[in-house]
Image 1: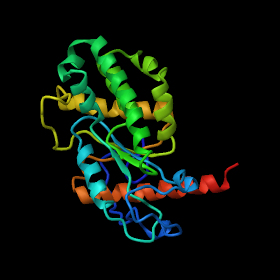
Image 2: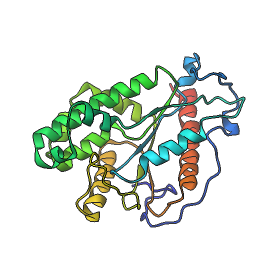
Image 3: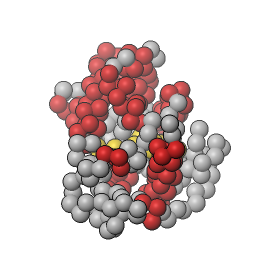
Length: 259
């Protein structure tokens, strides 16, 4: 499992603060439009990795996404990066639209699996729509989230059912080229709003976090963990900025030097 400093050690490590904004000098070789619309340069699109902020409920994902949104609201001039679209609260929208509740996940394996399928399909649609308006997006969940919840609350073989869906093939292909950030459970963000699924205990919360990481490993998707000990929101965002810059350079290098 990768942690914030890029090693495969315990999560209880210190994190070095990084100060690399998304609009750093490495991106200043191309210009962005001054409007909110995305560039028509299709060649540049493939060099901009999306960002997925994922993990168990109540780990600060949406808060972190909102911070990234704020940081990117007014990008500096003369850079490649245009504003990303934000893919947010897809699960909540599905819950309300189809009249599901968090209780359904606990009490019915059938309803749980139905819900996760609906969310996965909605996530694929939301991502596609986002890319109609920008070259890239930042999302507070991924298609893999559905598998983590289905495995834990429906059945272990539910993963195979979800993996058969065209929506999973679509979102997985995007995830392979994106930055995947997993927020570790245990942060003091837990609050019951009647919609989100609440863990029964801190152990349950941590087990779900490890389920996320295991599924990412099994799927062969690269990721890094924002440790629960890193509480300062600006430092969390700066860490994501730095990792995103590393990913952007790697993707660009592979595209230029690849077959």
